[in-house]
Image (cartoon, rainbow, N blue to C red):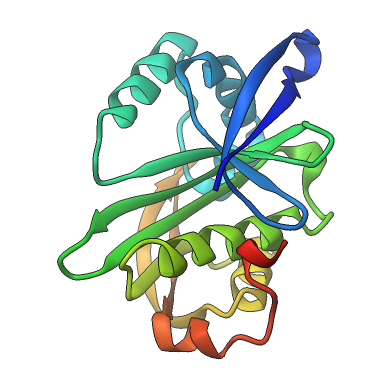
Amino acid sequence: MTEDIRITGGEHDTEAERELSWRAKSVGLAALDIDDAELMHRWRSDPTVAHQMGIWPRSLTAMRERIERDIEDDDRDDFLIILPDSTPVGHVALTSQNIVDGTAQVELMLAAQHRGHGHGTATLDAVVDLAFGELPMYRLTAETHTDNAPALAVLAKSGFTQEGIGRAACLHRGRRHDLAVFSLLRPEWEELNRPRAWDA
């Protein structure tokens, strides 16, 4: 499912044609492109995002190189999250895809100013519908710090079950953090009582 839209570049106020790879009621997913490197770099450099994701902000050049490398990776799909008014609000990815086993991992990042508005749940629901409705996935996993309350709430609201904790699994800012490990299986998704992305 694709749809041509116009998307503004945020602070730069530039316009470019973007094609949605997938859309739901309140968000659209457009394939991440090298031209999105500056936007991604700005989001990932935010101290809150860096802490919650346990990442070390890299240079803009490194971000461009990473996006270019990931585009060539057949085991992952990266998307820019776009609102109906064409505002880009974050990034979501299906990584470590194993078509034989039907498994993949979900990664989600929202820009600081767009958190707390339901975009995380809408995006997670949309990418889950893509994984189970269009791709042959059977098991999705996600990880987050155990003290990342917003992410824990979004995962639970989208039907994910916490199945364990990776103790001291992440080093960030000189401290070890536990990671909560979540999963969602296809039969559990099938039982979810909510509209699917293609019903939007």
